Length: 122
Image (cartoon, rainbow, N blue to C red):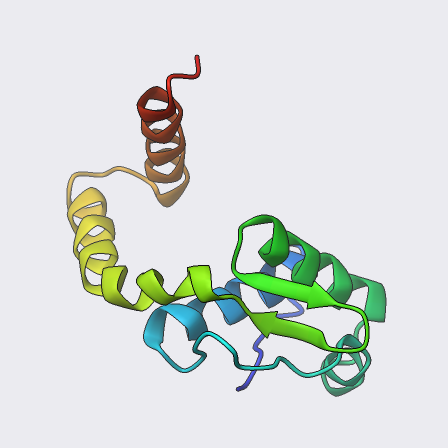
């Protein structure tokens, strides 16, 4: 697993770390049960603050992609398994949205709104 960041990007570093891990889950490079490197090691390798990596790991935990356990570290959760199956559909949706001029941010907002609607929330 190789976590990638771009120090020149305006995107927050924790978000880049999370996106890199998320991408590895989508491509199947990371599977449920796989252990991520300790935040300390990732931070040292990327030359960023350890708390930045922990923030990314916590974000992924909140999304249901990681389990964080004291003494066990960060492990890809079982609920991440369907993402690899959805990768082709997601790629197709993102390409179709881009062809229609819909930004990734707008598409993400539409997905969130659709999910809230399906769950019966306003």
